[in-house]
Image 1: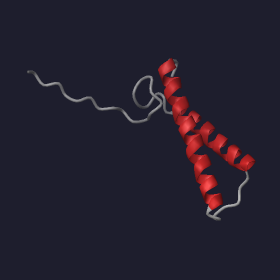
Image 2: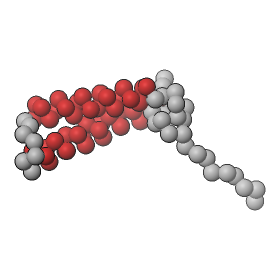
Image 3: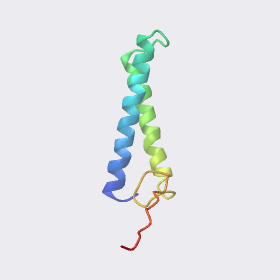
Image 4: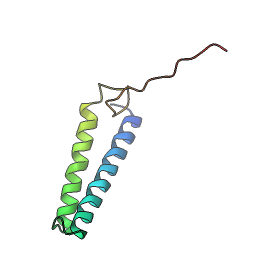
Length: 81
């Protein structure tokens, strides 16, 4: 959690979450499913990004070292040649 790689990956996830939340709300507004303005959209998307960042920090000791993911990456077995 104390490496630049971790924070780059965590911020990338948060930015993606912000964009996905914003697009979902604006699409829902355009389709008439919800009624939101730009301020509400930015507020909800910002909160989603904050939760994403906090989730990355909370799961930093579960998965791969220096990764915000809770999923451990399996390495392929090496076979002798």
